[in-house]
Amino acid sequence: MTQSAERPTALVTGVGRTVGIGAGIARRLAESGWDIAFTYWTPYDERMQWGVQSGATDEITKELTSLGAAAVPIEADLVDPTAPERVFAAAEERLGTVTALVMAHCESVDSSILDTTIESFDRHFAVNARATWLLIREYARRFAGPYGTGRIIALTSDHTVHNLPYGASKGALDRITLAAAHELSDLGVTANVINPGPIDTGWMTDEIRVAGIQQTPLGRLGTPEDTANLVEFLCSPRGQWINGQLLKSNGGSA
Image (cartoon, rainbow, N blue to C red):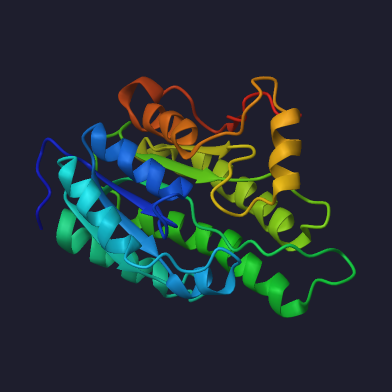
């Protein structure tokens, strides 16, 4: 165990690519004094249009280390219901008790009411909803920090049309996470959900990019850093009074 008293540990899920929201969150927390355990799952990127970013895990680890953090990458398929326990065990072995759980992982494959397959629907709910519950449950079972210091944050989306399994499973994620704000009150843990709005991390077409800019009053798309700044605030002592909320950090996107 390498955790120091000065640097609490954050577990960030879904940190597979350097341009992703998860990586942006990990960087910002590392900059502000956190040690970082992070999960990744390369076979997911292999199935998506952006493909695998070769060397991403090593690059992210080196960057976090350069920012003063101890960094522990953990490969995990969150479809597996035993994965959350293994992830926490690996994080604790290297870094000690996890103080902040930030869930940026997802399964996200576009499909509609008429063409969504049972397999895809079940996979979305396994990753986006069930794994969220199991990660929160494992966090609560292991949390040993001072009252008022614990943090749980999940990323969500309001997509539903032609995005059925993703949107529906993210709706379930919302309810699970917000319930933790009340059910884990004896631990002094806050739990919030963030909707980051349209952030291009390699999945947008030119048409989606243009439409996203037009629908945002500031005339730009969001960046991973925009989301990371809010996560860092919520994880800090200044964010303690914000609890049980679904927060839109989307630049006013329509």
